[in-house]
Amino acid sequence: MNFIKTSFWSGISTTVRILAGIITTKIMAIYIGPTGVALLGNFTNITTILSTFANGAIGSGITKYISEFDSEEDKQNVVSHAFMISITCSFLIGIAVLIFHNALAKLAFGDTKYSTAFIIFGFTVIFFGLNTTISAVLNGYRQIKYLIMTGMTGSILSVILAFIITIKFGVFGALINSAIAQICIFMINLHFSKRLNVIEFKMGKMSIDTTILCKLFKYAGMSIVSVLLVPTGTLMIRKYVFNHFTPNEAGYIQGVWSISNAYLMVVTTALSIYYLPTLSSIKDDMGLKNEIFKGYKFLLPMAILGGTAVYICRDLIIHVLYTPEFLPMKKYFLFQIIGDTLKISSWILGYLMVAKAMTIWFIATEVIFTGIYISFAFVFMNYYGSIGVTYAYSLNYFIFLIYLIVIFRKLLFKNSTIST
Image 1 (cartoon, rainbow, N blue to C red):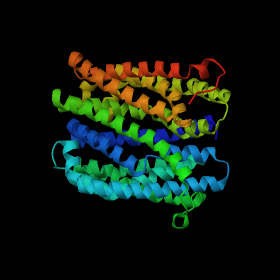
Image 2 (cartoon, rainbow, N blue to C red):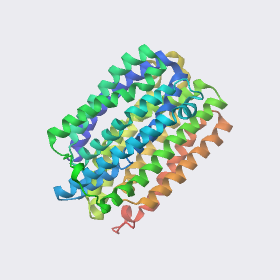
Image 3 (cartoon, helix red, strand yellow):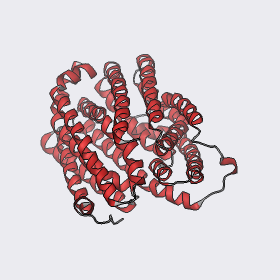
Image 4 (cartoon, rainbow, N blue to C red):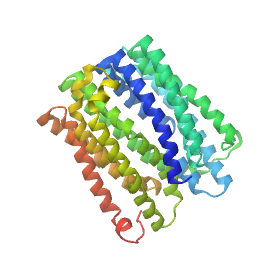
């Protein structure tokens, strides 16, 4: 599937997901308020980390090697090992969550009031792992249409569940919504996988291929670093705002982050379902260079237009998505949107690190720039208040973009080979 078709399908998916997000966000704003939104953000950060470990953190590797290998036997070898890793890791993570559910609740909420949410997550974490694995397989096989159909169906189910559960159980309902949704999404994924016949379950008689394991776990290293650092960084910043300013301000920042994620979804979806398998399959530098510039030609204008529209309509967006209680949030928009544009500019180049398995470069980059972001955020908040988070976000991605341009300067400006 080419870039235009992928963008079309991802646009449809994004429209559905944004509408689903609007409804869900409105429900959350009404029934759990700014403080509840902040607590939900903390819970989501922690469960994001844990659910990535449940997949063995090999999602990108699955997509890369299925895209890269030519023979169906090699592709299915990747699939079999991926499911073996996912089931094993999900079981171990589930047990750990059940044992340490009270400690996790204190980390997320400051007390054990909602520790039952982690117990439920512990029992359902295997579905998070399996869903991520199936999605990565479908992406590797370029089954974009079915991958997007699954995502859209999952978004609609999440809204229905959020409406029923959050209204009935408040904050606790909001916390367990994603766990219940994953069970439903797994059934949908299983249906499409059998229909497309891209997954053959042969784990009972498979032999362990250490070469495949090493290739996949090379990606696990990158994913683990990313999933540990990014949510941990946002969790630290949110808790700092919560403790040093007000719980409501933490909710405002979480609200702005959610809006950013929503309007950038069409861009990030196109990157994840088109760029990773495409860049992985390209063997020559000229092809890589053409794909990178194609990304800047189509995706960057989309990000700029989307950000401009969000900024102009920020009052309306707050009224539609949230409640009047969230109106102070509008002062956070400007530098958040500037940072979003710089972020997309960076990610178009940054996907090369993932596609070409530049493990050391990727890990070093994640560590350095997460540290810079957190440091900038704390410094700027001390000088400018909680809005300093958005200043730090913009400056961090500006430096990140310059850094990536320097790393890939030979590819971008000359016809030389990338050194990995």
